[in-house]
Image (cartoon, rainbow, N blue to C red; front, side, top):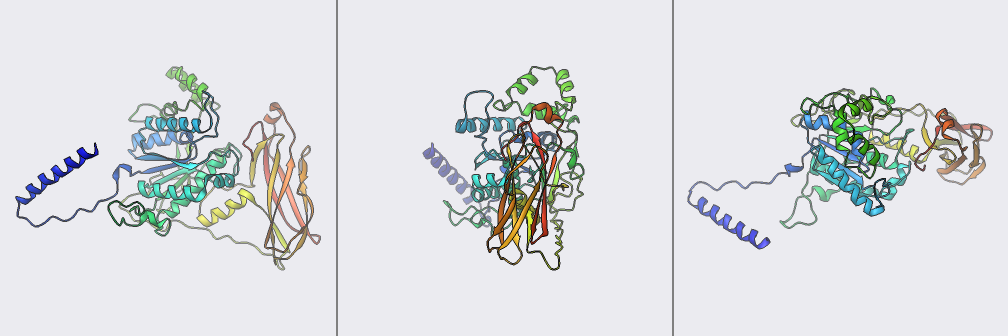
Length: 474
């Protein structure tokens, strides 16, 4: 086959050369190749697992069918540690199956540009576990490459934050990578080999891409309470009828989900056996609907002037230059005079996000109190950071107020901390076993940890915790 192509190309070149030789005009200018337009996208969706695209497919159906947008999808893992409720395969074999399911699901919406990164499916609620298990740097480099290749105007991803709900660490990590790639793709000093010009025809190191700045970054969330995101971005009706497809957007999204048999076999078989009237009646019940009405996309960042609740593509135009619409609010910290010998803050993933939001200038919905949901009867771990004002050794005392039936297993009492800038400690609290009926009436509980030194309060940490019948490991 290769020899045939070489012969064909040589013959074609000779034919073109003889035709050109018959003319006496000046030599034509050399044509410089541009980017591969087959992969140009308007929207790049970055999600963690095969089937995660379903979180926003009602909006994607709108964008594709009725707004004629080009969509590409990146999955940061292949879902190998998930369950298989359909057949016997697990582990790497399941990952192979789920990749095909995802490609088929995307194809149902006309999405053919689909990539998978090398992140390992990591079942926990801690974003730091996922980033560590994925190989953060290598997968960030791969995602930046895809952003530069696809040149999206808008990136949509999972919300990087901790909320009561599924709160999957992989979901959060995909949002972290999407945010970092949003910032880095336009920086020529980030992964510079990607944007270096090719030195020769058979170049294997330098990629000849170009820096690219997406205009907007949006998020969606796996939180139980979706109403808390109202007003944080544009809201779209999932029940609206598509003018071109004559079906509601939720129905187009549901049809696209049918390849995911390893994850939802009973639901898919049930739905496909129903008549249109039965499905519509079933989905009109809020308890059964797969999507909230309306669906809100959270505006995380924008480089163009746009109202927070304005359309996803408001202000986005390839011919319009970028403004300086990204603004960061300064964080003012009130310092006591004289300052205490130490201070206490919530650490772990909460501490990570505190710095991440500030550093990356990301808008996220504010919560009144840090929160998490865990399985009843499991142990709750509360990571703490003690910052030493003068990097000196200090003795502190930690007291914890917990609800009735909860017990502090470790982390309370007196601690003599070494000479250093910061010391990390962990509170471990055992929670009571509860039956499903009890949990249905159970409301989130407030936990308070107070730290004192030399008889003076140096700070306190509060965490709202909901006990659930099932939850990912913390």
